[in-house]
Image 1: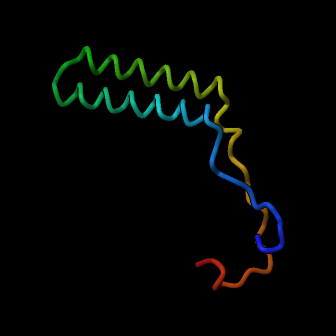
Image 2 (image 1 turned 180 degrees about the horizontal axis):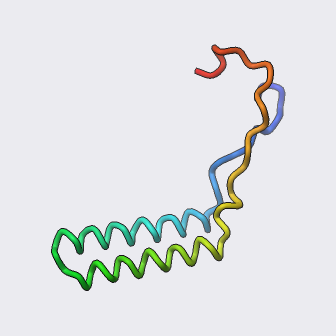
Length: 80
């Protein structure tokens, strides 16, 4: 990056992070339901996961991936 070239960014958009957070919250809710042996809470968690999946499709989170430019000419020491 010393030469001013942008090598990409894997940060993602805020909407994509929202979808991931909803899915993660669903897993947490479902996991709590499993440890409590409460099937209603497990299925609520599954519903939240599905909602997060729908959000991920709507927000097209896979378009956030940016492929870095090739690193031609880099030495082995530059990879550390």
